[in-house]
Length: 53
Image (cartoon, rainbow, N blue to C red):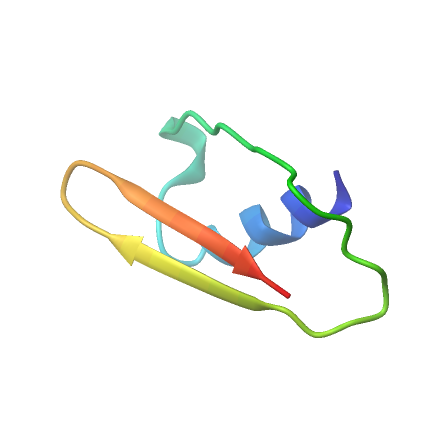
């Protein structure tokens, strides 16, 4: 859940997060502290993101 909150904080600078629906799937554990890469793809209809370890 901390990861989700951190990603939303980063996305807030790019999109209006108050008007979105979010579907989150946790596939693997992210052990903290670590470095990760957030990939964001924006379009008029949809924004998708991917967090990679």
